[in-house]
Image (cartoon, rainbow, N blue to C red):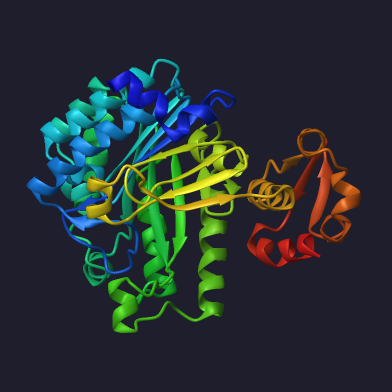
Amino acid sequence: MWKYRRKLSWLYWLWMTTRIKHLYLHVPFCRTICYYCDFCHRVYSEDLSQRWLERVREEIENNCFDQYETIYIGGGTPTALSNGQLDSLLSYIDPYTKEVKEYTIEVNPESLDEEKIRIFKKHKIDRISMGIQSSNDKILQSINRRHTFKDVKEKIALLRSYGFDNISGDLMYSLPGQDMKILEQTIDDILSLDLEHISLYSLTVEENSVFGKKGIMSLDEDIEADMYELIERKLTENDYIHYEVSNYAKPGKESKHNLSYWNYEDFLGISLGAASKIGNNRYTNTRDFGRYFSSEDIRDENLYLEKEDLEFEHIMMSLRTIYGLDINAFNKMYDCDLLSKYKEGVNDENIVVENGHLICKNLEILNHILLKFML
C-alpha cells in the first residue's frame, strides 16, 4: 500500500524528470512567540506536535525520492520539540542523507541542551544556525526572546565542545529601542563568538505579527541604512565575506543550502508553510493544521512560471550574491541572449561582467537596479 501511494504522489512524476538536490523541512512550533515573527508556527504542545510528527513522516515517505546534497531543518524552532520527538524526526530523514554535503538545523539558546546536541551528532548534522538577534538583554526582552547573551555564549561553547565548527548566528537591526551604540556593542559581542557565518535581518513588521497588531514600526529608513553600513564595515574589517545581500561568512563557510536558492536550483519543502520549486512549478504548503492533518492535497499555492518569470527570478536571485549570474549557462537554459535581451539592466553602472558572470557591485541598492531588468 505504501509503495502504491508513493507512486501516486504529485511529486513522483516531477521527480521522474528532475533530480532535486535540496530539502527544507519546517518545524512549526516555538516555546514562545517572538513579537516580530509571522512565520508558520504555534506554541508547542505535546499532543499537537505528536500529531504533526506522524503526519510529517507520511509526507516525507510520499514525497522524498532523492539523496539530498543539502538539508535544512528550520522553523519555528526545531529545538522546541522534545528530545524524543527530535530524534524521531531526524530518523525519518536519515535514509536521504547518504550524499549530504551540508546538514543544517536552526536552534534557539533557551531550548538547546546537551542531549539535543548529542542527537544532532547521531544524525550527522554538521551546521548550526542559532537565533541570537542581539546581545542586549533589554532588546531581547522587548522582542520576547527568552534567552540572554550569557546563554548564547554558554551554548556556543557547548556546541564547540562537541566539535561543531560551522555555526551561523542571526543578527537583527532596526529594532525598537536599538540605537547605533547598542548595535555596535552587539556586533562586537557577536564577533567575540568567532562564528563561521552571520545572517543579517532588518526588522520588517508583518501585519499578523505581535508588533504588527500593536502598530510598532521599524526605525527610520536613514537610521536603518546607517546601521546596515555599520554592520557591513565592522564585519568585513574582521575578515567576513559579504557574499549575499543578507549573509556574511568566513572563507569557505558560505551556506551551501542558501546558495542553492540564490543559484535558482530546485528544492523540496516539507511540512506546513514550506515552499518548493521544481522546474516551472512553485508550490507552497498550507499553514492550516486542520487541513494538513486531514487532506491529501496540502498545497495552498500551485503556480506555473512562464519562461519570462523564470528568467527574471533567476536574474533576481543570482544578483543577490557576489558571484553573480553565469551568462553562458543562463543563455543555454533559456535559449536567449541575456546581454541583449536585458540591456536596460545590464547597462546600469552598478552591473558589471566579470569572468563570464553578471555581477552587481552595490548589493545595498539591488532592488532599485532590478527594476531596470523588468523594462
